[in-house]
Amino acid sequence: GQNIDQPTEMTATEGAIVQINCTYQTSGFNGLFWYQQHAGEAPTFLSYNVLDGLEEKGRFSSFLSRSKGYSYLLLKELQMKDSASYLCAVKKGNYGQNFVFGPGTRLSVLP
Amino acid sequence: EAQVTQNPRYLITVTGKKLTVTCSQNMNHEYMSWYRQDPGLGLRQIYYSMNVEVTDKGDVPEGYKVSRKEKRNFPLILESPSPNQTSLYFCASSSGWEQYFGPGTRLTVT
Image (cartoon, rainbow over all chains, first blue to last red; front, side, top):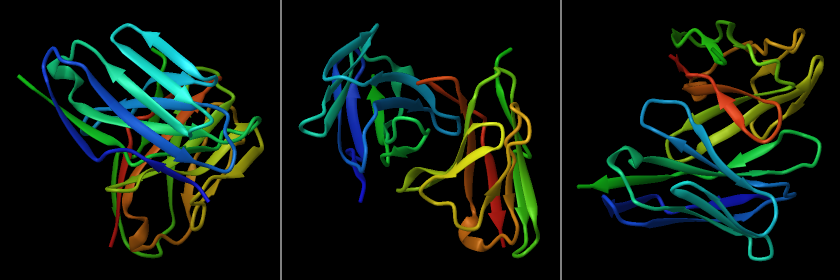
């Protein structure tokens, strides 16, 4: 089977730091991806991890532990425009393009 | 401008009436996918394509067909739509790790 879990909703304050967790159990693993989706819009790519460790990209960082089936997305210096849903996804195969997405975490940034 | 386009953006139809949702990308990407998004379930992959004439099932392929006759186009076909296929559909394309999503097609089947 396959399962990806994320918190349903989170709230944080402008300027703060927030960590969105993702745990996964999938049949196959070839990368963990994070996407941002504003209400009524298409998802947009944020980051990916293939190996264990932290990947930093401006205000956004993503961490992966393959042995624990765990990832998190860290957002620093939160801005109002960061209010969106954050989707965690696992790429399952080495040669295919088979992706499994989590249910998403809706983040609200308050002034 | 690099983009993925879908048509139509909104569609209301009746049970059993065949329909096609088109998807086109202008980035010369090898990989294309179709997803549906439902509240509480997230994005679920329907079909994906590795290149022209190469397609494979995602996690929810039942009731859908696809074809990839040209690199830029990847239409989604519902031969006999049913109400449980009411959803928001996204097409995506990729040349590697990053997927680019189209604007979405909101389909209602009554």
